Image (cartoon, rainbow, N blue to C red; front, top):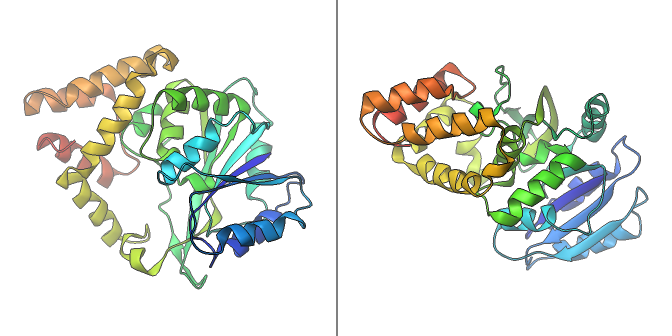
Length: 303
């Protein structure tokens, strides 16, 4: 088991995260920490944990200093990191004790040659660890048709098996990405892998005070996300994702390639043509509200 932890100026909270990692019920955890140029005491805190890390190895490396996505990408493609399972980790969360074990237990029931991705709902807490709420509980099945327009879970809840990591590393050497969690969901489903979304919150996600307006805990937050969709921010992210998929077409299943082709065509032309092609593609978001927003965005050409 390899846990990939990206850090940047996380001194205030990383100790709680490391404690929750060490308290995992899974017996072996090799922790890789990629620090992206911290100017506080983050690396000193991590170094102080090395002597007491009794679950495996704790390795601290220098990140590329190009942002969080590039930092995770550097670990995804790093050939030194060898494991049967890989979990992404943020620096300021708290993991439930069986967060890793739940994912491993599910993966052990399936063929290890299939790319597998486990993710879950999150509980949201304040900077002082007071509980605020939960991320949305999604009901529709994970799929490439959903991944094209939505990332259903945070990277801090994700675990992938070796087959998925090899796939993701190959795709990531060819392209950068907007966010490692959305990219992982896209690539695994595009290649015919299997995704498990667990409705149980297995991670307590720390929502910092400056960002509480955007927390996934209310209708206000949903409307905020819809507003970004109409402003065209989502179109830029989609452009980046489609660019990454374009250079990885050989990894896609025939069904995913056909869906992708319809989706790309649906972004151009008249409104009725766009909506017709979108319907044929079968692309969807997880909620009725989200899917309606998607169709409205296509209607006004904002995606």
